[in-house]
Image (tube, rainbow, N blue to C red; front, side, top):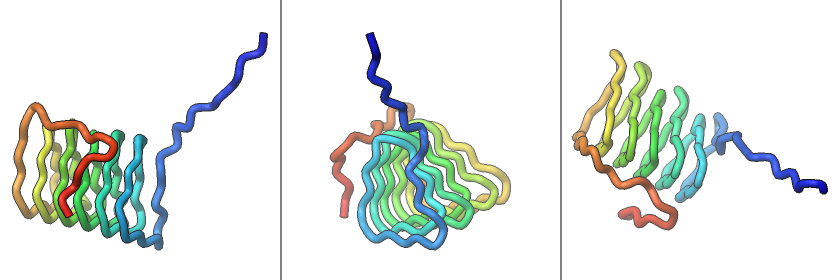
Length: 126
C-alpha cells in the first residue's frame, strides 16, 4: 500500500536584501530578514535579523538572533542573542539574553523565566 509523501518544509521564510516591507507578518516558522521591515512580526519560531537587515516595529517570537539593526519592542519567550554587529534601540522582554562584545543596546530589558510564547493572532499594540 502506497503512502502519501508530503515533504516537510524546513526552509525559513526569507526577506532578501533590497526588499522593503511595510506591514505586519505572522508565521508559524522561522524568518530571516536581510531586507527592511517596518511593521510588526509574530513568529512561533526564530526571527533572525541579518547583518544588513533592519526591523522597525514590535516583534514577538520564540527565539531571536540579531546581527543587524532593530528599533522597537521585542518579546522573546526563550533566547535573545545580540551579535557583535547588532544595534538594538528599544525595549526587550526575554527569558534568556546573550550579548556579544561590540553589540549596541540602548533601552530597557526585562528578564522573566515565564515570558509568554507568541501565538497566532496575538494582539500587538499599534
